[in-house]
Length: 281
Image (cartoon, rainbow, N blue to C red; front, top):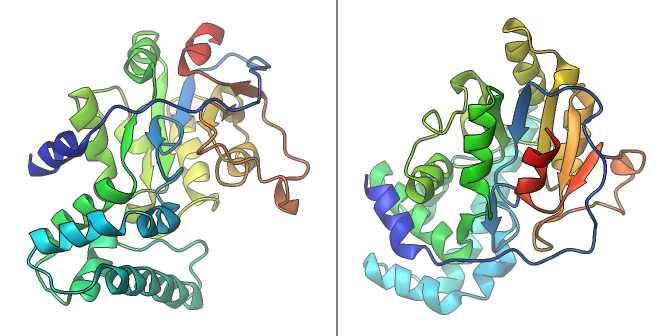
């Protein structure tokens, strides 16, 4: 698959940057299902999150200019960035005006507008290379061992993540298996680009809870692991899940200490290494 080849070509090993929070806590009840955030939790993200690339993009203007030249584009890189982020904001406003809470865009459609092209496949290729340039990612240490360990113990696994079309390919490119091959349940995979809205909206969490309940897994037996108090811990707790804050990388850890919505929210656990999750289950 061309997407996976591109991801591997751009891939450079990264290490998480230690944060100051120590691990603490343990599951409050037996766990039968684990749901995950992706960026900053399962994958190291240099920009911290899929949505945090604007400042990173500005710092990589030379690489973006080279990318444009590779696609035969004559637009100046700074103008390209300005149009790109302006189009994202305009589309989110359009969707918000239609009543969509926490709207998500389709990034290939944004690029089709910015580049003034109708070839969706070409727009997807450019979108992926742009993302790999401004927000490279790499598996968090212990990721493969964690997923294998949970699958071998018979735990249900799922993902609720702000994401784009290329996000699932990051797993197959780096780990050699697609999401279902890694043990994730298809009906527990929720990506914002498919849904049309993202976190911290709670709809995906609620649907995940209902899908788990159909197979006999109660909400309190489900654990959600994420790095963001607002986008992960708050909606997961509202859905009745146990919550684990991943504090393993200071670039992506988001405590939201100035956000009143998170003032009274506390995770059940804090971990600083994915291996700690296996150790406590």
